[in-house]
Amino acid sequence: MTRKSHTALPSLTSPLAKFAAAALSAVALAAPAQGATITFNSGAGMLFGSGDTWQESGYTMLMEAYDPADVGSLVGAIVDSSDPGYCVAMACPVNGDGAYYGAFNDSIVWLAADNASSFMMKSIDASFIGLDAALGGYPRYSGLLRMQGFLEDGSYLEQDLLLDGPGSSGFLFGRYSPFETFANTAFVAIAMFGFTCDDVGDCVAFDTNRGQFAIDNLVLEDALAEVPEPASLAIFGIGLAGLAARARRRQA
Image (cartoon, rainbow, N blue to C red):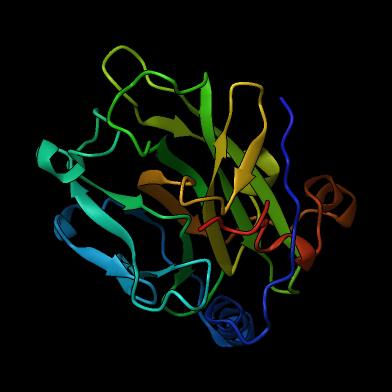
């Protein structure tokens, strides 16, 4: 499978960069983050515009549009999986457990501990969300979820999770455990955003609002593991040039 992932450096004055910078500056003074599982179950029905946040179990999620000009635009919702009306015009996962967060319109989700300390991502449930409720036409891998975890020194690791196309009943959540290096690394913030893939395996991000995904049951733990050696980090492509992972300019 190939991936087209032309990257661009975001503005240092963007809300995303400020969010990461705040976490990085505060980490040295904070106590370790507590372990938790984020389920979204208490927020079913909530809608999120760019810049809105969700807080649960000692963690905060910041929902952002990729384009800073899209202030207040709809970027996501906490979906009640028992009510099919929430996704009547889209292809959302059909095996949700309670509520889950749906990220729409090429948006980015940032995650950090409320006390700005470090934490580890142990597992996550994820699914692709299609723009068309009809199940025909989606490829074997309809998209991928990229997680970009930022370390105290400003470097980062990337973890890509391939999201399956729909089965006979629709899209399904899968439970993903990141690679050992990612899962055992202490991060101060994690950015998550979606790619859409075609039937020849080319995947692009931030392209005509198709990078949509659903997440649930984020299992987070205290940052007790040692940070990997630089040689291990190099495998994941350290460097701020990949922060936005823009594939091409959004089409009108």
